[in-house]
Image (cartoon, rainbow, N blue to C red):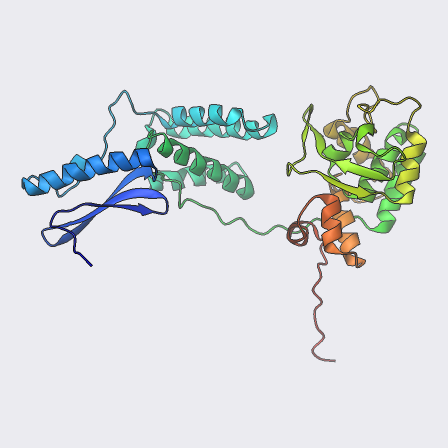
Length: 366
């Protein structure tokens, strides 16, 4: 193998990022360029390599490497606030309003903590300090998610040459384990359903509640269900849309699913199907029309009924956990259950299975 010539600077790709490597006066040098590996940035790297090689030949080599690091002018530099604002604007066209609210909320903390500091001046130590500041007012699982947004923001900035280094790469957080939600028992489900059916004020929601308990779908999927999503005889169902924060959109996983319904649910749907119904009409409309708002339903109907029938309060979305836990505990195929609820079997076992799980503690002595 032919050895590199003295002073030759080699261009390398390290995990998709460009760097230069060379030897001089018996020492090895590496210079991270902060540029993704693509054809345009390869040309930039080549020019910088030629500058270093020229300095070595002319004995003008800067051993501190300061000369070879890109130093943007004061006018070109962006503050941390400006960088995150640009990143938020970029993401605005790709995410829904509920997700965008997370970016907007994080912006307030960035403004308060970093003020007018340039994005490329933020050190890893400051990034850890910011993480600890967030932990004083935000739950660990949320802080971990926000740190992910900051890592993505600085990576985005690197690709656009707004910053060279990403100080957030190793700033992470171990989120303590959280106990799985306790599913509703069969008895509790019956109490809840009977409570809705017998209540003069909230019986309007009884079919909606039975649908949630019987299918394990997400609240927004049931609220956004339209008659056009059902077969003519209501024997089968297609779920590909959801209602969330005043907007009809694709499901959380951006995937659709279809399956046959049980005779009980089929009959319930047939009985509530109006004559001459439009395919775009909601199956479970709100009392005043339109889709059911999950917050209003939870606060005005769900909470009072659970208290009335003596069932310990759990969020309406626990109907999904309850369906999955019961179905798997009763021996139904996890793959089929996953197909019905729109998750992978692995996700079901990790996130939705009830408190008991599947493991059985062995009896080792009398």
